[in-house]
Each structure stands twice: as C-alpha cells, then as structure tokens.
Length: 238
Ligand SMILES: C[S@@+](CC[C@H](N)C(=O)[O-])C[C@H]1O[C@@H](n2cnc3c(N)ncnc32)[C@H](O)[C@@H]1O
Image (tube, rainbow, N blue to C red; front, side):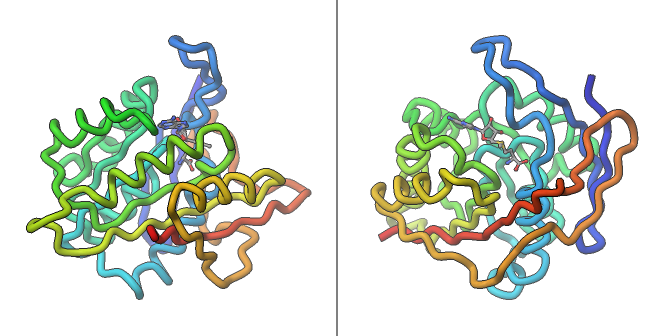
C-alpha cells in the first residue's frame, strides 16, 4: 500500500508519500486526497511561472483547501511564503504531516483540519492558528462534486472576510486548477451563485509541464490516451 513519489516543478523538488484508493475508516468513502492529482502539478507549475509574476510569495500567508498530498501549498512555501496552512478532512492529516516532514518544511507549513461548510471547523482552525489574514487560497481538483460546492463557497466566504478590519491589509486571492470534466461548469456555476466571479486564466492547458518519478509502488501521473484538459481559474469575491 502506498509509495513515495518524487515531484520536480520548475527545479523545486518535493518528496511525496502517497496512498492509493484508501477508504476513509469513518465513512467508507474513497479518500480522493490520498494520491497526487495532475491539477496539483499544473497549479504548482503555473505558480512558479505566471503566478510568481503577478504575486510576490515572499512573506505571505497561504491557505490550501482540500490539499490532499499538499503539493501546491508546499511549493508556495518554497517560493517564499512564510506561513502555509494545508487543510483537508481529518483522515488525511497524518499523511499531509508526513509530507511536510519529508520535505523539512515544518517551520513554515502547518497541517489542519478544515471541512468545507462547517463553521465549527473554520472557527476551530482560526482559533488554533490565530489566523488573521490569508493572502492566497490554493485549490487543486476540488470542483468535482456539485453537491459540495455550496459548502466550499461558504468556507471561501469566511476566508476572504478573515481579518476584516484593521489587521486586514490585502485582498485575498483565490487560485484553482482543475481538470475539465462534464460537470465542471455546474460546479463553477454553484460558486458563482455563492458570490464569486470565476475568471479563467487565458491559456489553453493540456498537460502539466513537470516531472514526477515513482520511487516505489505509487501510481504514475502520466496522462492517459484521452488527453484530459485543464484550466486555471481565479475566483474573485463580488
Ligand atoms: C480530487 S482530491 C484533490 C487533492 C489535491 N488537491 C490534489 O490536487 O492532488 C479532492 C480533495 O478535496 C478534499 N475534500 C473533499 N470534500 C471536502 C470537504 N467537504 N471538506 C474538506 N476537504 C474536502 C478531499 O479530501 C481531497 O483531498
């Protein structure tokens, strides 16, 4: 079960402990965040090129939602973010912590539970981290279940308002990468209904331009014959 994967994005190397098809002992559902999705490589690659031009990571606070193995958030730390909070559902946190440790990023990267739509979960995160401002939110491959989008929109709403008032110095940016599937549009429509404009980064994207090698029994990220396409979206609160 599982394996160790080495990921290289624009010269930045990460070691990832990956699980495969692991079911959540609490719900019996497959833990989709237990392996690396191509969108996370794509978002990371984009951050090291275009993202870096329009956003200075130095000294910033970054929050990743549905982080899975945590690649974009860890890349943000390597690009200069001083505080990165990787979040996901409880069953994935042990593996996320393992990945942070494997990459010696424990001084800048924290791992916390954040269940979308749960105010209790959000308040507990804010309480335990004393988070008072988020400069950048990262999300990769989280637009796949239309029934979850209202909850995701709620959490995004709380995040962008976090620190509103005197300590709020900047606007929170929200970047996401997704594989385009038949239901992606419906997911994005839900987020629009939740008060976010969805702006596609104008570049046709088909494959992550980065390398990943399997060190043991992990899955490959090679794209299949159907050539999936991907997009990067900026979500802007109205
Ligand atoms: C398809 S996986 C993508 C994982 C990772 N971002 C990547 O791109 O490799 C979706 C992620 O969203 C998380 N997720 C799904 N529903 C969630 C919820 N209600 N609250 C928090 N996280 C959730 C899953 O646990 C999983 O890590």
